[in-house]
Length: 156
Image (tube, rainbow, N blue to C red; front, side, top):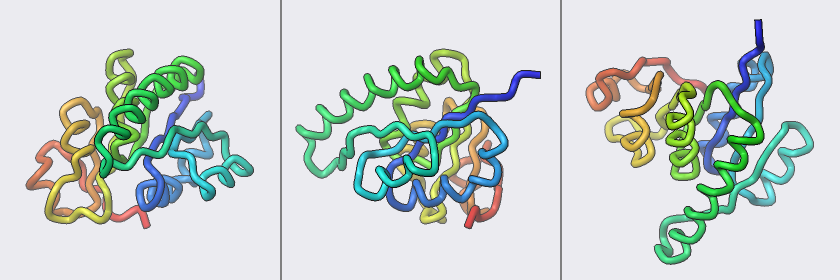
């Protein structure tokens, strides 16, 4: 049986920290990490197969539109190169285009809502929830916001 290819994508910071908590699981598959470029994430290349997107905070709207467009095009290139079967993400905005590309190409999407959110949704969570194949929350209380979600407990 063919081994599944995973593409794991997240923004830097807490989202990436949570995604890397799944290392014990993703090491059993063919995988590739995608995150934003920074001094910290460049060091990840020593340990993992990684592609880096442009860092793009939303606090500068004009620059963000440019960076978001660039990252969407680069995400398409990464997707075509690696041809993943499953996208696993902890968010945030960096991951949304990849999830929609995956859905367009008939791939599975697993979204893990942030541990930091126990009573309100993230923007990326709201955007990916309708197209996700598996939506996991880390707090029982989030099942009220995402009724189709699966409570998975904390990944820390």
